[in-house]
Amino acid sequence: MPGPEHIRGHLDELRSRILRVAAIVGAVAVFAMTFHAEPFGAWGVTLYYPVPDPLDNIAAQVTAHMRHDLVPPGVQLIQTSPGQAFFAQVYVAALLALLAAMPAVARECVAFLRPALREREVRAGRAILLPSVGLFAGGCAMAYLLVIPYILEFLYRYGESAGLLTFLNVIDFVVFVLQFLLAFGISFQLPLAMYAVSASGAVDSGYWLRNARYAVIA
Image (cartoon, rainbow, N blue to C red; front, side):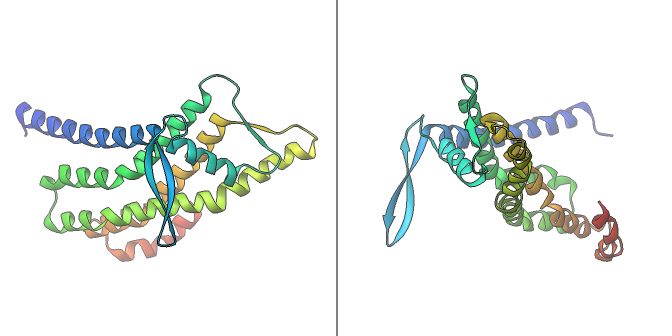
């Protein structure tokens, strides 16, 4: 049975890895809150370079794009108390930071668990680093392009049919969007979880096929 020193060593390692991930997330979030993405053309392609601008920052630009792409016609996005727009941008910056830090999160998780894993499991963990980012981004894209616009438009039609003025609080809007983005991004990790469990030898690949009907019902 591991002694207190052994457990303390694992806890210290876990803390250091969490701090590294938190530092990356914090750095990206601060960058998104303090810099503006300025467009410029090069070789017929629109590129961006960062310019210091805490007011019209990257998070504010993303929020403006979300309003343009997702808020139904006739619905006004409003701020009803001081600071709501600021905190909405903080939430957006946190999501951008989470997306940027996903490779680091996966790498730190694999590195922390490596002593307890077999070589085959370590290789499987490394193999899912990049796909995890792609699948998370794919889930977010599906929610952003296909799901959220139709849900918001469907729900706000009830207010229009009743002759109501339709407004949407910026905090409620951002939280609603982020919840869907995270839910779809995480749900798209299911294939990787299935691959990791199969690669570890806990179940064979045919197990998923035999029980696919339960996944459909869920």
